[in-house]
Image (tube, rainbow, N blue to C red; front, top):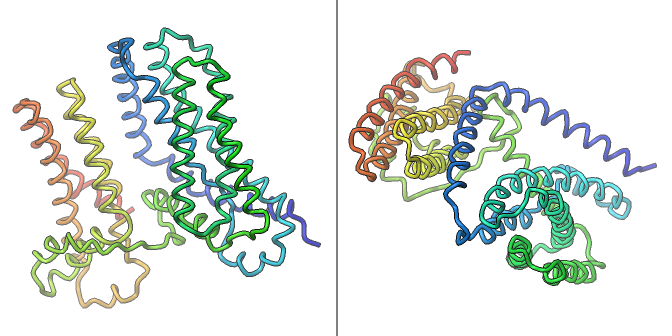
Amino acid sequence: MFKAETLWKQRFGQFLKETSRYLRYIFNGHLVIVLLFLLGTAGFYYQEWIHTLDANFPAAAISAIILALALTYSPILTLLTEPDKMFMLPLESKLGDYFKRTGILSFFLQAYLLLILLAVVMPMYVKVTDGSFRSFFPFFLFLLGLKALNLFIRWKVQFYIEKNTHITDSLVRFSVNIVVLYLLFSGANPFIVLIPALLLVLLYVYYRGQTREKGLKWELLIELEEKRMGAFYRVANLFTDVPKLKDRVKRRKWLDFLAERIKYGQDNTFSHLFVRTFFRSGDYFGLFTRLTIIGAITIYFLTYGLGQVVLALLFLYLTGFQLLPLWNHHQHKLWVDLYPLQSATKEKAFTRLLSVVLAVQSLLFGLVISLKLEWGLAAVSVLLGLVFTVFFVYFYSKKRRQS
C-alpha cells in the first residue's frame, strides 16, 4: 500500500545524501576562504557606510525592495524526478501529505535567507530611524508570515502552465510585498500595514478556487526541480566532478567574431574547442561577466587605496578558480580522445585561454581604478594582476588539474 510519508522519507534522505556529498567538497575548498574574506571586508565597509547615513536616506525603500525580492522568489522544493510523471501520476490524489512536507522544507530553507537579509538591513534601519534592534524579532515573524503566503500562492500558480500567468503573479506579489514592507519600515500603523497584506490572502483564495479542478503539472514541476538541482550541481562542479550535471548551450552569435580570430589548423584544434566552450557551454562566460561587473563596482566604491588592488586580485582568483572545470568539460566525450594530437596541445590551448581571460579582467579592473584618477594604483593593480595571472595559470592551475 502506498504511503506518502514513506515516499517523503525516501526522497528527503536521498536529497540530504546528495547535497551533503557535494557540500563536503565545497566547504573544504579555497574558494570559501576567499569568500569569507570578501564578506568580512564587505561587512567592515558596510558598517563604516552606515555611520555616514542621515535621516533623509531612503532606508525604508531599500529595505523593502531587498526583502520583497526574497519574499517574491518562493521556489518549492518538490524533490520530483523524471520518472515521476509516469509512475506517480496515478497516485496524484494521495500525494497531499508529501507536498505539504516539501512546502514546509521550502519554508524553513527560505526563512534562513530572510533572517540573513533582515540582519543586513536592520543596522541601516536603526541608524536612519533612530529605532531599536528590539523590533528585529517582530519584523522577522511578520516576514515569515508573508513568506508563507507567498509560498501558498506560488504553489497554486504552478497549476498553470501559461508563462504569462507566472510572470503576472510574480509582478503582483512583488508589488504588494514592496508596499507592505515599505509601510512596515516606515513605522506605519500596524492596521495600515495589514491592509495591503490582506491582498495576498485574497490572491491565494482566488487561485485556490481557480485551481480546485486542475491537476498537477508534472512536467513543469520536474523541470523546475531539475533547474534548481542543476544550479547546485554547477556550484559543486567548481570543486569536484559532477556526473549528473547537464550541459547548457547558448549560441551567443554576437561573440563569433572573437572565436573567428583563431586560425584554422591542427595545432589550434583545442583552442577552437575551449574558446567556443567558454562562450557557449555551461555558465563559464556568465560567471566571468558577473564576477567582472561585481568586482568593478566593488573596486570603484572602495575608498581604501591598497584595498582596491587586493580586491582586484581576489576577484581574479575567484574567476580563475571557477574556470578550472573547463579543463575537464569534455572528459566524458569519446570523440575528443580520438583527436590525433598530443596532450601538450590541449595544455597550451587551455593555458592560453585562461591567461587571456584573466589578463582582460585585470586590465578592466585597472581601468575602473583609473576612472577615479588614481593612475599609480591602476598601474600597480594591472601589473600585480598580470603577475598573478602568470602564477595562477602556470603553477596553481596546473597543480590543481593534476591533483
